[in-house]
Length: 243
Image (tube, rainbow, N blue to C red):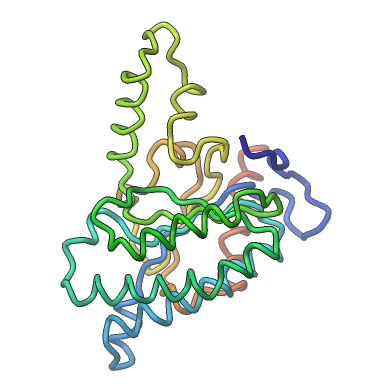
């Protein structure tokens, strides 16, 4: 179980009255960002991966302790083979570049999703990065890689059946314990870049009570100003609810 602070309200370290404890980010728009600049889709993904550090720094600066990033969905396998393979190479570069930084900075890296079908070398890098940061407690970065929400729920149900848990013992708390995100709690805020309004199979259980925020800004341009815009909307919604 991950021990982190409860939801922060009236946080004294920022100007926000309400601060989400756990946010999810759907990093969309890399391809469209590249097309506007006459670049390849893979080059858009490259700039997208380079923006991860800036976005995480912005979250840390605002006091957000748990971030889930939607990196690669189970549906993304349907993209052109060259794009998928190129993206995997970029992801491997990010893991090599950032794992030691995460370890030193107290960031725990988690993986939500399956490694089935993932190139063995990349799967090994993912497992090693998760293991290298396992004891960190300052922040959590949960990477949804080869992830699908419905598949996760089916996986949890199968594990419960395999464990022989009787139906009267089943509860939301027990079910949550069998999800990839066990111990992280619900997502308070889900941000989608690129302007789309769809949830796209993104953590349907964990995001069920969260606030959804969509921005037309493409992921490579998402920065602290954009994050603060999402936090302002989050605070406005909660403030109106309390009024």
